[in-house]
Length: 297
Image 1 (tube, rainbow, N blue to C red):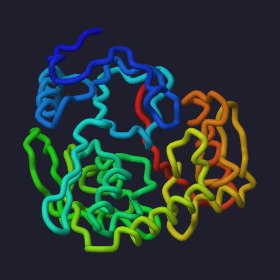
Image 2: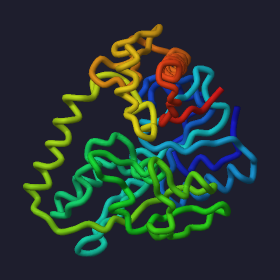
Image 3: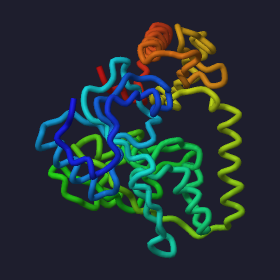
Image 4: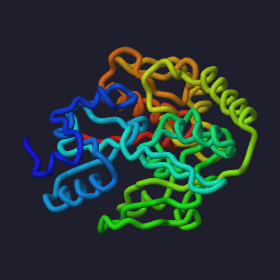
C-alpha cells in the first residue's frame, strides 16, 4: 500500500517490522514507518496525514510501547535521532527536541554544569515520551525541571505552554487530555558541580543496574504505582517472581518488570500482563493499571 505523502520529507520504510524498533522486541509490521527530516517536515507530514485521514501514531525511543503481532495498519512516525537538538539557551536553561533521549539531555546538562536532570539519566525514553508521561525516578519528575513545552495543537499550530499549565501529575500531562504533539521542551536548571552531577547520575545508574533487568527486553516498569502500594511488591507477594508464560514472564530481579524471556510474541507479553493483573487482584483486591501503551491489531 502506498500513501499520498511527499517522500522527500523524511526516510520512508514500508512494511517495517516493529520488532526492530520496540524495546520489548515484539510487534508486527507497520504499513509505513517515517523518520521525518526535521520539525518542519514533521508538521507537513502530519498535515498530509490529516488531509488523507490516515491512521498514525508517533513514537520516540519506542521504550514504553507494545505493538500487537499483526502490526499497525497505518503510519508510525518515529522521532528517535530526529528532532533531537539539545542546546543551551541561557545560563541555566536548555532546550531539547522531542526525539532527543533523556540520557542525552541529562548529559548535556552535566557538561554545562547544570543540575536537576540527574534522575532522568537512566530513563530509556525520549523527551517527547517523558513529557507525555511526566517521566520520573528517584524522587525526580519532569514537572520539577520543565519551564515550558513546545507543542503542536489540534490544528498543527505551534504553541508554547508553561509548565504550570501542562497539568502534570503522576504519569500524566495535558498532552494526554488533548490531541497534542510534543516538539520539545525548555528546562530550567540550577548551577552545579560537574563532578558532583556525574557522581549522582552514576550512582542512580548503579542502583538501576543492581535492581532492574537491563539485560532483558522490556518496557521498563510495566504497571503504574497503585495508590498506597508498590506494584513490584504486590507481584512478588503474589508468588510471581520469575513467573514464565510462553516466551514472556516476570523478572527475577524486579517484579515490576514484565520481560521478553525467550523470543516472546506481543501476545505472550499481553497474556502475561493479564495473568499478573488477575492474580494480584484475586489476592489483594488491587487493580494494576498498565503503564506501557498498546497499539496495533
